Image 1 (cartoon, helix red, strand yellow):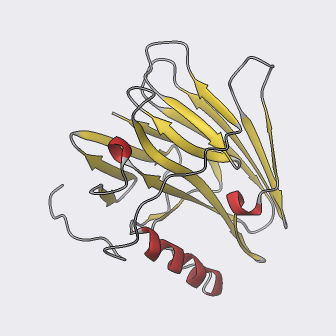
Image 2 (spheres, helix red, strand yellow):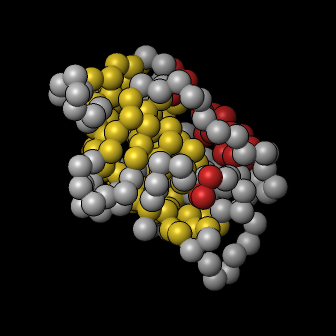
Image 3 (cartoon, helix red, strand yellow):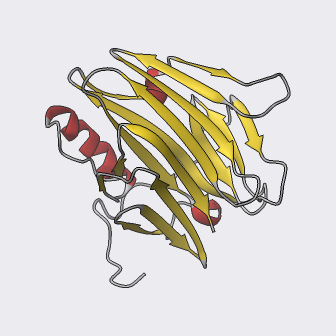
Length: 210
């Protein structure tokens, strides 16, 4: 990408993969070439254009409000349901101190896109999406751009995270920097942690590989 420079936190820490414990696996019936897994109540691997090529380590969420901030994956208070026993359309409900977050994960049947619809209930809350791209099966040498949406690129493939309502702010950084910034954000409400994407309070977000 033009104007490339090291992101905050460079060189970061060695990239790792997410857990093998899965709540669900989903894909679509159609020409779409995307597969996703759910673990710890979040999207924790996305494969494209084949099941052996992961592009995303995980897509998680942080709820921030008057009582502090909560990474829903680490809170671990959630339930997964589907419309039927053999219908892979997972809906995940997270509940915690003063918030209720519902996520619906739907692979687009016609495009290489994963749609995530969310509903956040509670007072004075903000929702942050935390995306960890591992393009072509590795977290190394990914190029990112934070603008109106989040874009990652590697080897001619592009990953884009965008929201139908638009993001209020975006940021990109190495993993260690993001972890430090989250702790700082807990003490300084309103500051955007590096590596996090601030979304609107209601609506949907859809990451997709092209």
